[in-house]
Image 1 (tube, rainbow, N blue to C red):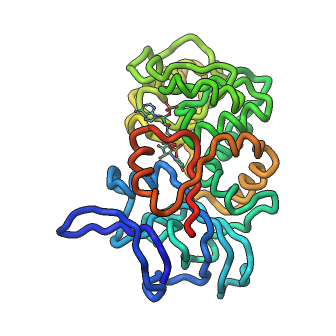
Image 2: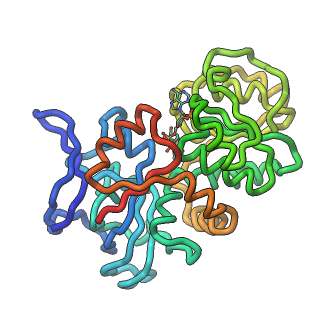
Length: 326
Ligand code: NDP
């Protein structure tokens, strides 16, 4: 038996709770992992609260991230005792996930835990942090650097946003952090933000073109916020879009793209090819200040997952949440 969060949906409704589950019920897979830590991302919040159509089959163990040790493996790349992490690939959506003591998965989905990290630190980063790194790498690939000009991060006090602020400032960028939580200004300055901007100035409909300001952007918010960030991008500025915390819509015009040569780069962590994942994790090991990572992290146990998912969806969780599943 192992402990896990289980989401069920039937005539009694949609519900998530802590359960004891027989290992015989684990899904098929060539690697079995003793999970030590998982985490809560926005998508886990949507799954656990039922606020978004994340879970595709029921019952489902949520958790799009996990870190742990291989118990047994039929996969050529892994053997018992290996330290591994997993992010995405539909785990926690279509395949039982990481908010559990044990997981059985495809070895092809796993990444070896970088030596620089403990399993706990890897989950402090989680999909949110790895996605922030994918955004930074995309900015670099498209020619944005610390000397190109200011960069802006939206949803800055959340998980992706906090990690993006810490990474970009650590790399020498001048970072403006957009947040709806003025009480988190000191926290964001501590992560390296040079300026804090009120999200109210971004979240309403704006002009197709605004004063040129941003050389680069990491947007986790979508909707009018993303449209306004594009409208204020500098000539040949680069905007990475990874989230929808404000909305899935994009009420923008083509003006920034055809008049200023702005690039809008989509970022997906779920199906991201393995070499880029490994590169992102290696960059996180090199570029993310562990002291800042600690400052953005809180820890809970499985018993607190459901209540914390509600707080996350209400925008009341700061930074990242580690879940110690034992
Ligand atoms: P969090 O909940 O930790 O952070 C989201 C932040 O967005 C909040 O902290 C808040 O920041 C801001 N926000 C929330 N609601 C609104 C709103 N209505 N209008 C404007 N801003 C808002 O989530 P994560 O950091 O885990 O994820 C952020 C987004 O990125 C999500 O949409 C998630 O689905 C997406 N994502 C996408 C991935 C991909 O592969 N493309 C991978 C990981 C995440 P503040 O309080 O500072 O204003």
